[in-house]
Image (cartoon, rainbow, N blue to C red; front, side, top):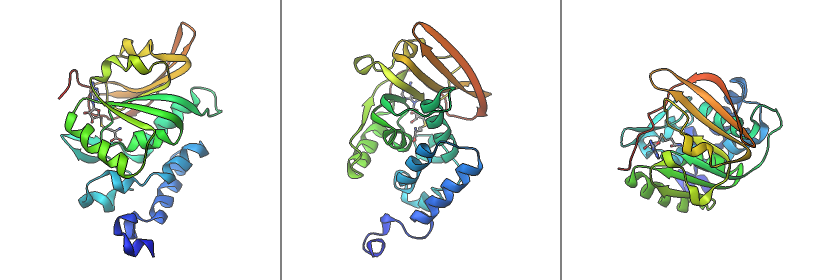
Length: 226
Ligand code: SAH
């Protein structure tokens, strides 16, 4: 009945059943962490894209969110969350404070928000921050804090972070961010330019271990704000 009263609650291609099919597909694609799968099932992805694209929200594809930026496909959002929670051991950890660089439409931040106590998410495009802040408020997602700024420098005032997730590609790991990782914390990012690889850096005391995973395709991490 709620679906009839409020169409954006989800009918047809945006229903809970469509979301369940997305979860099944993520499982087939190799996502193993049940906590991550549950988080993906809780966040209504269609409410993070333009209404015109709603019916495609659960497809395995990146979609435009304006300003030449894209929302990552569901698999990559789940995969980065899994890597942020596991590092190299297979026991997922619940996270305290997480830093995301590249808020965009807020979808990935909302998923991370289901896995962490708090998510600080930086975005360099002011207009995107404004729009996403309103959306998060409407959806009553209160533990994601959007911040306008160049994420390359991190968010020193909120450090240390149990995990840092960068949703844009860069040729090297931004050094300022490594210093903001908590002991035992992990940074997950697409490393490279034309060819990109998902990279995880884990901190143990003053030692940092870097591991490369699968190939990916992200928009570039850009300096400065817009
Ligand atoms: N996680 C987002 C994906 C957004 S795409 C989502 O779920 O929608 C990557 C985003 O990173 C873009 O919005 C882009 O503007 C932003 N970005 C690029 N360089 C940045 C920087 N230096 N600091 C902060 N945000 C940046």
